[in-house]
Amino acid sequence: MRYAKILGTGSYLPAKRLSNDDLAQTVDTSDEWITTRTGIKFRHIAADNEKTSDLAAAAARAALETAGVAAEEIDLVIVATATPDMQFPATATIVQQKLGITNGCPAFDVQAVCAGFMYAIQTANAYIKSGMAQKALVIGAETFSRIIDWTDRNTCVLFGDGAGAVVLGASDEAGIIHGKLQADGNYLDLLNTPGQIANGQICGSPYLHMDGQGVFKFAVKMLAKVADEVILEAGLTTEQIDWIIPHQANRRIIESTAKHLGLGMDKVVLTVQDHGNTSAASIPLALDHGIRNGQIQRGQTLLLEGIGGGFAWGAVLVRY
Ligand code: UT7
Image (cartoon, rainbow, N blue to C red):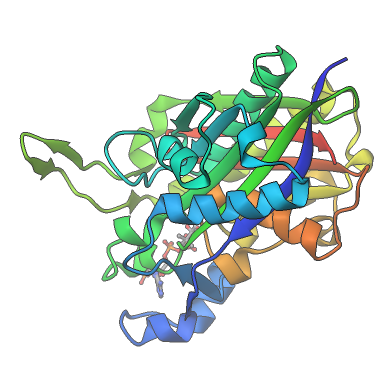
């Protein structure tokens, strides 16, 4: 059996760190409100000269180094992002160029917002399993600070910038065990950034809009369902899950999924307090964090799960 195995991970956070108290100086909010409702304490903000591709390339370099893989060995680059450098080309090709990959391998972006990394890793898994790729670089990278209305307290306290990356390699040992992706476009009004470039102008709002409670309810329901399904379909039980690596949007949503699965918070890699919601970057950032701080060990079984605008969501089971 051919699997896609995680050979190495990396991440990058911009230097600027914004606390809840910092935010309370500019909008009508408080550390107490943000902490109680979301669990967030800090978020990182990209410098003016840092683009999504810079964050992505930095995370990718760290992942390549841990994997012991040279950039030239990579034969697939996928970047999950909702905040690309440009309308086109894909941020993945810019990252490919920044990493000095000149072998002509395919490079493309995946747009599934906060579920983007789930979509990207499942796509790379299919490439590797089918023999279309040997070593893939899968990155989640975002500069959400650029699509946030910093005067809107309903949204500006929630998001941050960052990037996480994984090097996957073909292996006869697991590997990605099973995954499931889902989407329902009927819920597109719950969360979106509607603006688009047309006729030389930005048409529609360039800022993120969200029905917070609507998103909360939908996320809790769908994450529980997809987690149940992916575990059942893989022939596993929840007791066999060593770590949940959830999308880090809100501590209460994460707690709800863990509780539903009958797993304690000691089985969850939690970074939301330090990173806020970094959209497609949040799962690989948490994964890298959990590996580097010694929580996640080789041979353990991980449940990655995330949901975001679209609505799009998914879960992936990995034997690390
Ligand atoms: O990747 C997916 C992305 N998004 C999410 O996962 C978000 C999911 N939703 C949530 O996390 C929560 O719905 C929020 C954290 C966004 C909001 O929490 P909530 O408990 O649903 O609060 P709410 O929207 O019902 O607002 C309650 C009150 C309102 O005031 P009134 O109308 O009761 O007077 C808001 O105006 O809290 C107020 N409020 C704030 N107060 C202080 C909203 N934002 C803030 C704020 N600081 N930053």
